[in-house]
Length: 280
Length: 220
Image (cartoon, rainbow over all chains, first blue to last red; front, side, top):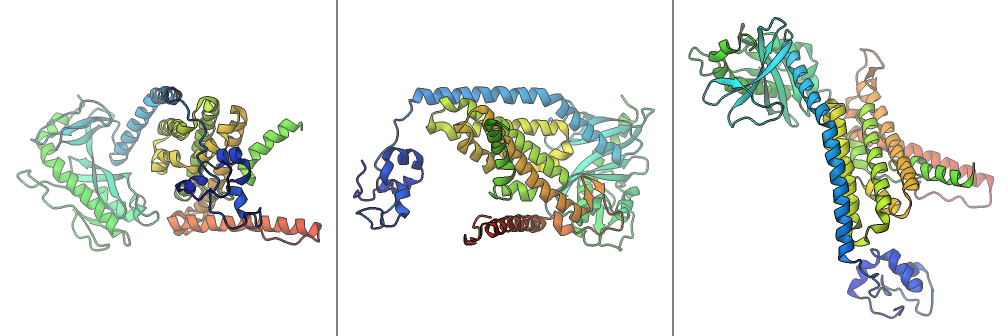
């Protein structure tokens, strides 16, 4: 098998692949001999893997492969199930705390929350199942927040709209008393740090949401005025959002997500507010 | 130190210093550049990668005698993916904020070439203990690399260190440092620094044993 004069076969590119095994087996003339000038009688440049006839070591029996793969899969399956079970409670608790925090942030008076869905046909009902369980198509999820005395402190809902980098998802608090948005928080975003993410910190911008008008039309079918972000310094009406200079796209995304979510939710919610007045 | 302890130390230091994955081998650049916007992110990513490295190298090493070579890569990937899943759950359980900050890069540890490289090049040829020591060294070396980037980027780009404000309210953050280009700038600066140290060391050595010609290092 160690013939120097073998023509380079179609196997030549496999040289590197089986290098270690082949090199050990064929000893003298494997790939490494290549670079040596004047290595022997045949000193012309030899294409790679000249001495690479099929030296594949005996193939492992199929049963051994199946056994090993089966064993590895079983061990790994057990480890994953163990990790999932072990962390399930902590993960669920973390998610609940994160949601509660977001709600408490947008409705400062809130002390406890209940999850509801607004059905597509109108009407609301308590949400069945906790966490990420899906709701019926077209239904809108929202949270009713109650104060220490069990009275309704506000409604929180999520909305999302395309920002500069990705969807900006925000949570906003709605107060039925003033029919306005009373606070926002960001659920997730990938906006540019230092520019777009000013929507979290910019005081003037956040002041927009002290009482952002979100009144419904007389027939309760939609908002009386579209909530909208306007160019920095041109806010004239209580339903407008004064955008951050330099972060107009992100500001608009906030406005649009509030508007879209409010348009979908409020016409169904407001007629049913009485049901939510006190904690059930 | 007895010889075996010296060898163990050597195995460990290989990854921490001589073959540092970030600064010498320049491997695993994707998480290195992407998640190092703050010290805490870098540290968590380093810890997660170290955990995956050590556990998967231990298991690969234990299985090495009855892993047919035809299916070894499949076996390694399944083992690595398992421990990445474990880390994924663990980080979700520890902190959702951290989980969001690291994003997809936790799952992408699976394809981090450092881990598959260690499994193939070291763990599959050594016993569990040396494999774990070597893997721990590599993981810690990776974490050091990430931390070196993360700390610099956080200080310059946000004016904080592990979330603690350093310069007071008057500081104008150098925002580009926490954006993707900043990752390249800082990585480049660190590589330059280590290459300078390496060259200086070589110059000193050659000055001592003068007569030998000075050879610029190719892989410094």
